[in-house]
Image 1 (tube, rainbow, N blue to C red):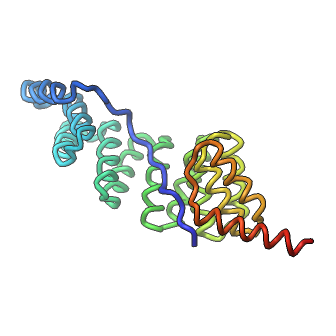
Image 2: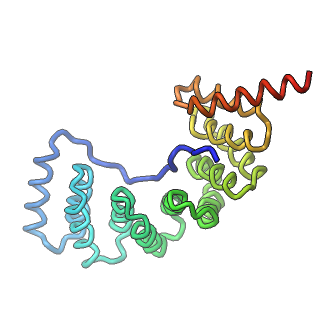
Image 3: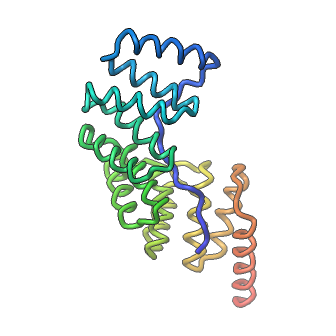
Length: 227
């Protein structure tokens, strides 16, 4: 089966300041002066994560959780850190802890679904994307990822429905056009698949040349048979 683009995950906003090293020094001092501060631990962990000091970030987030196990922001950051480190099971576990604190968080649900895509656990991925969309029907990333999942589950009508909704809500979201093209391809609607690949390219999205060739060949063959 044609390989999709990687699933999207939502991360909390990062501090991209050029004063990163000074920020780290300042926050390390703040932590030393206030070792029980959950906020200081969270901020330090986020700056470490942004600086790719991932093990230090994990220590900081876990330190904060010792003092406030119900800190949603810390749980969320720790879960995205684990995903960044490739520790998908740990990321899912931490995400589920975050959901216990904030059960309506669609970002967390979508992140869990994306992790399950990476693990090719399609039924679980579908469960969490559908939960997110029930709460937030316009969640574009969840819809685009759901296209991928439903194709893998051989639910092509559902995949196309999710893709059509995604591109109607965000016509310039290239990955949604790409995934919808894949769904149309497996349904045998090659002209529609090619149309959405063209739309993705016009937006500036880098479609797979190999997949585009496959779709073009199928579309030409289908046109020739019809004539």
